[in-house]
Image (cartoon, rainbow, N blue to C red):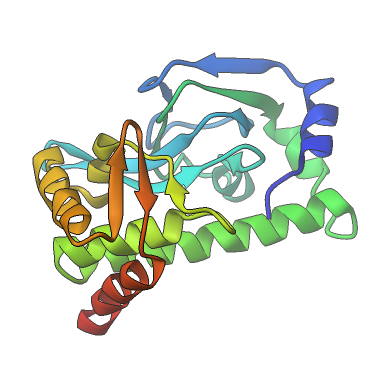
Length: 210
């Protein structure tokens, strides 16, 4: 669970906002953080560079909290963190954030649930990266990123490539194959799902291989 719009609005009254253009770095792996960030608009990614390419592990959306693991452990940041799209974050001093972590409060409970969700999502992303062929990995990613009741995934092909740690041309070729099968339709900056059952079947084939 992420912070809702009401909590975000209340936080915005007392916390400064930082805006980021697409691709801009919020902080790098190994940075000592004295602030925690709350996504207000746009998409924030977390990942690492490997073999000269950026691999994105997690996508964080409005209401998600960034940097809280480092603040809790008093350790450097675990991942590079950057804006996937134009984005804005609220800047919360780490000391203030830690003081607010009373698990009896609504904020504390939401944070705990949200942290558990991010750990679960990270585990799922690692499974996607380590198992299956590219077709099933792409299908699993699209299936995972579909919102409740939605048939559209608002990710660019480059973002999908970054999430899977592969070349954009390979993603384009794979998406075109899924489109020819009538499973998806490629749009500008998004993918529309035409056959949800077939997409889910392709995603499940990746789990069977893993």
